[in-house]
Image (cartoon, rainbow over all chains, first blue to last red; front, side):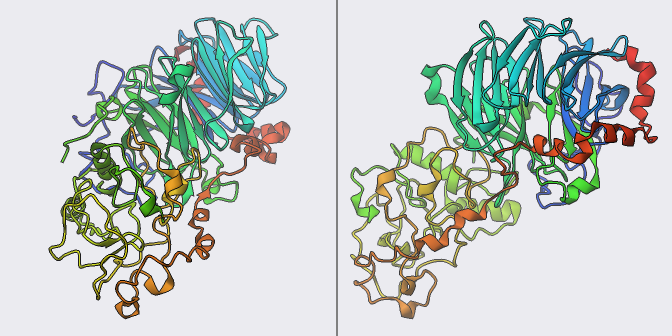
Length: 370
Length: 269
């Protein structure tokens, strides 16, 4: 691994490590204590981050453009260069906290939704926002489904709605058993996690009826879901530092399992976000403990645990080729408003140059490694 | 007690009393649970507890006092145990005490548990320091899927693959249960009951168990099942009053990105 110097990395979507990067993962003693190092993993820091809690991050599917949404209603778009520097390009505003974002498949527009009960489409070429969806309560999740050219929005009004973006009324509305907390789509599989631990699995070939309805395999509130890229199942993350690996087909139920993560001694933190790597099929979890971990579900291994950040990690996202993992270090409110983290008001976005070793699946057995 | 009721002679883990279908899986388990370097970034899996102790001492300068995740009294890192081999002869499974000095040449390759109370040489000293209460007697309770996490767990990681379910019905007595007060590990040798009488006929210390409840020590940082973090946050006056918020924002917070953004928007594709 060479050390990054600005501009030295042409080609590919990725970039090198920041110059002060530690030479190896295992040698150096890790800062596990609650040290107040703002950037313990020596990742690239995005300049001009949002001014309030960061609620979502999403990458353009065609270029290294990163969108961040924030609780103060802002939607920012950054361009990330090969040297790891992010340049703010544009921003938009909602009339309330923004909770979710996604890109259109051609990278021409950004969708965002939030507490103003609306979703808007931000056409980047003209820099104009248009309202494309309306709910009766805040929109917690949204997702652009390119295969059907529809925007799916999940809301606390207990509905899931599909929008054609040119019509003021939804193309389809589906009732959910509870408030939508999490949504993930890997066409034709769409998974919704709601309050009261309901999981709704949809086959988008027949989106009217849930393909499956079940209670979360986890005992506590669902926080995030992530559909497998191969569509055979999904991950569920809960507030109780635990992730379930679930398969859709009954024949594969025996392969289901759960594992614990994002815990520190007696404290159990929420799993805030799970994202699959776009090519390797491994995934990353980000937690309210300020840690993000890379995992391989097939070999049941943790590939890498990163050093603890000085605040929670509410969200993260891989860029299109998986060479960059962007993550927000920003208070997620999991300890309420009295916590020092709430007062500090630090909201940062870091760009982690993903190493092959962190995301490449590993063979299951680790025998003979002495 | 549970010990005796064990039917088949399945391989079992000396450190935590779990049974396994075959010895290979047992060894995998031991490497993952008991012989894994506890340094958080290392996680190297060694073959034996002394091997782990040496590794951690030489590489990380950490002195291993106890085998991780082991039942109290069975956590001596000096014992060279691999799978079913090397279990100290005459180990008192009832009270988790070695009945003879583990350093003496008594380490016998054995897969059998000695009959309890068989031999209890005088001067036997059990326990190596008192490990924290967590981890004690907790193995049986860890299984329900989705249960609260326990302290004393290994660093987060997947469970070793292919483990058979633990023998629920076989652990009624909770391995690692508190022995009677007089036999507390680490208590003075003089207080030991006379040899021979030692362990078996004292099944009463069940009473004090509920008090230990170390489970409550874990704290879920967010435990409100009725509402998500975002719902709670969105209900704050700061965010719920759209009017007030917009006004506050209008008060001259000019943000660089937005300032630049308006003109450059066209490039951002």
